[in-house]
Image (spheres, rainbow, N blue to C red):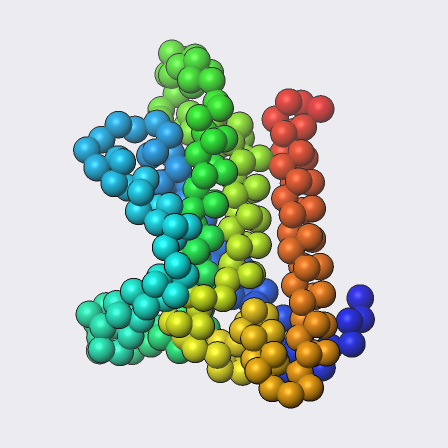
Amino acid sequence: MDLGLGPAEWEAVRLSLWVSMWATLASLPFGLLVAFALARWRFPGRALLNGLVHLPLILPPVVTGYLLLSLFGRRGPLGQILEQSFGITIAFQWTGAALAAAIMGFPLMVRAMRLAIEAVDPKLEEAAATLGASRITIFLTVTLPLVLPGLIAGAILGFAKALGEFGATITFVSNIPGQTQTLPSAIYAFLQVPGGENAALRLVVASIALAMLALALSEWFAKAAANRVAGR
């Protein structure tokens, strides 16, 4: 579909997709682990973990970005360790944008997967255990296939949230064209210059199209996974 985007606009689209993809892939294993822990385990600090997971939804995004900058900036404690020990710089890089997007999308991802895990009938897992299956085998052959629709939905919702992330990203990694300028940042930048309204509108249309596509894929994959589990 030709939206009439220029090279700089296509670069913002490409970077947004790249950042969102890595944000989703990097957070998916942690999201599944945290969702399983909140759904099944009882341990001290569970309520605190649940609060921390959902904190990005409550805090202003700029606060999250400031905290990330304080921790992972070149003068931050984690940022100094990464730079001095491994030569890795996250602040003002696309990797920092991916980190910010992952954190902002993490609550939506965890919630979708947690609801799917809580919906699994424990008797099915108990039946597998009575047949001698180990916990890992039970998880891989019983639990994971049953929660697959929720896992897919959570991943795509996290991707969609990462695609639209602005406040934390621009605070943490700024708005550098070709390096950290994602779709929302590019829209903001075009609105700050005279005559940039048309370019901003084109990117708004692209953002809506990508978001709708992500939601449609989420529904399709979830239904396909559910049908597969049901044997249809």
